[in-house]
Image (cartoon, rainbow, N blue to C red; front, side, top):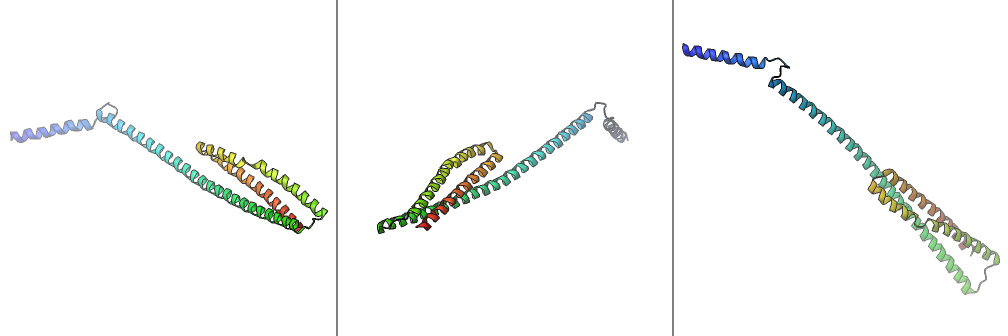
Length: 196
């Protein structure tokens, strides 16, 4: 019986002491209270870190979308520039063909001993003067596109998308201007060929 009594008293004593540890009131400075406060602070910091991380991911996704969109725009600009260049080359090719035809006609007239009427000669000279003026206008644009492309390389390094967009617009404008002049020259060359 003594053994049972000692065991029961030991259990009661254990229960009383353990209950008093857990029954401590908050704010009395117990280790458990301090641990809870620390864990709550840690949890709050974790939530703040997660929120900042989500914000950074969102910003990065937005930047990526902007960059992808701009990359598509740049590709379209490049394609436009290359298409304009192809158009200009085609017009230059036609220009060369018209000049060749004109030179061949003049050679045939010379070889046949035919004399070109003075009125026709005057018209040919006037047309030639117009072509010379237009050719000077073309020379004024020479190197402009190359200069813009050099600046463009710097814009890529600086990631200045607006400046790149402007650069492509300037290139397209120069190409359109050159195409217009080349078409005018071709019209005049066609008229000269028609005179002969």
